[in-house]
Length: 538
Image 1 (cartoon, helix red, strand yellow):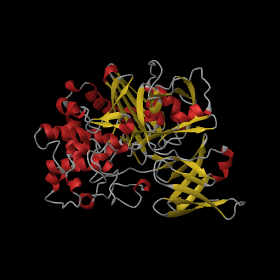
Image 2 (tube, rainbow, N blue to C red):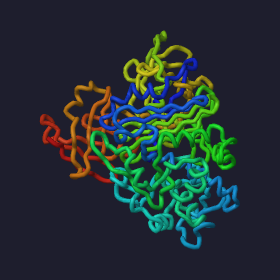
Image 3 (spheres, rainbow, N blue to C red):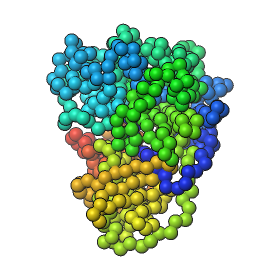
Image 4 (cartoon, helix red, strand yellow):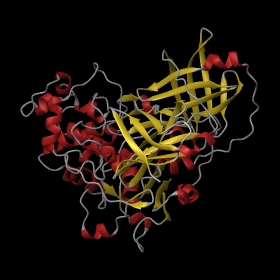
């Protein structure tokens, strides 16, 4: 359910507004890249609904709009609306704190934890981490990470938790925070979070297929989950249900999207409008956030959206009121982000743009580190006679100057506009697909990285066994080496010296091992909170 940064999803547009492809056409063009499963889409445009299926998603004979999928973190939007409803009913305040609500049950070690408000939980500004430290040794690699995490464990974590720094905290994605909010609302109302969702949201809107617990008939319509090429199984939730427990269909999510499209006309007019109000900046995504919903802009128009992901599913809900458009993407495989399908509706041709030549000393003026949000950083390097740029969690991509401090990507239709203050480059704005994302230059040294020929890495590829159930798969994509730990997405790693590679998404490094410099690679060491050795499989 973590929201991984995606360069192409987060970037924003330089070209005149393009006519979007239908969502079904976009899905058709990329479904073949799935190793198993399929894609279901739902789209509502100016009063007309359409659904499609590509690949093999649900059971045979079930219409695509009736197939059920886990929707993961889209559940957070429902939790946000439940908070708004509870505030409007006078049961609680946005400023209500954990100490007020749980002080009789928990003695907080850190007063800052006790002072966290419900609004901070709903906007990811609480200072709490993505996951609680007592959820398990490696939850991202677990087949069912939330299944045994109950209220007792949650309260035990909160009692001993310590928050670094001082408020106000910038928005930083927290499944813990939104799950805690859902559990607090459950306690407040004296009923399970699932029942609250049914009573307050799905029944008024007529969404009978949006549930946590499936009926026998719904079980038969559940699209089987996949992790890559392998079959997987469903996730289950206890205390953190409000962060990602719901299952739904494309038909139901279009109903929900239409309630967000015209909230004044919905059965949930007041709480929906409350949830959609901007509450805080969300710089990691170049956007803002309401109560659990992310608020950005496309071509200057507000867009309300959230993606989701569990062990075998990926999902996306996007609402653009100015275009009377709702988009839903449901995938029963965790190998492809649902955002990529939405993005494909706007993929633009590169076109021909005249470039200019700049000497190395002029290119060096742009080299630096530029911060968009706490976990979203652009790194600009010069490699020989060209600039290369990466966003956290993405490969470096070359850009060419087109004049006036503007650069064009070579592989995607996107541009970077640098801005100077007192003749010194002080910020950049990334532009693609109708979005604009700004980042300011910070006083941080650029990493010293090496970019050898890709052929030098071929012998490093393969599977490295940390344990029988946990493997690091090393592969090459384009001009970048990737490392994927079982249960996690593949992340790029960057060469710091021969045989040594560093992540940028976490403080970790990989060191490849040989018996001697002239012999083949026999294993690797993952340096992250200690040393973890993995032997290369034959």
